[in-house]
Amino acid sequence: MSASKSSLTLAALALSGVAIAALTGLGGVGLVAIWAGMAVTMLGMSAAIRAVQPAPAPIPVRVPATRRDPR
Figure 1: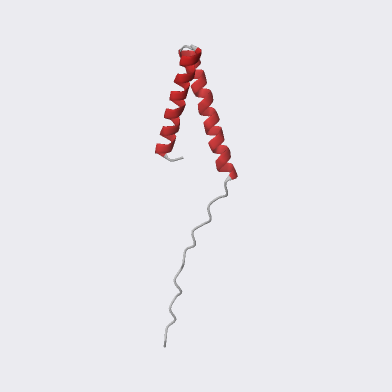
Figure 2: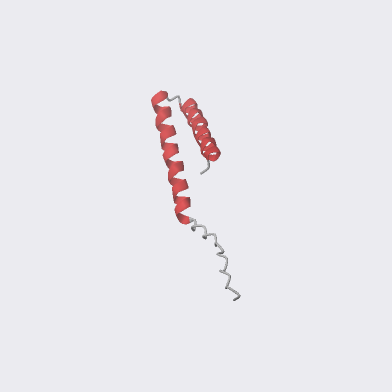
């Protein structure tokens, strides 16, 4: 994940954790528990997606042929 994508994901997790805690009336401990659970779930899902995706093909490098001596 890129830095901006991961920060957006963490911001979304934090906002959703705050919303769930506000709706359920949980205190700080409940908020932290919900946020941590969602963060672990998101990290696990992204790791699983990376494991399923095939590795990128190596970039071919062309090596110039050596010149023969015309003599």
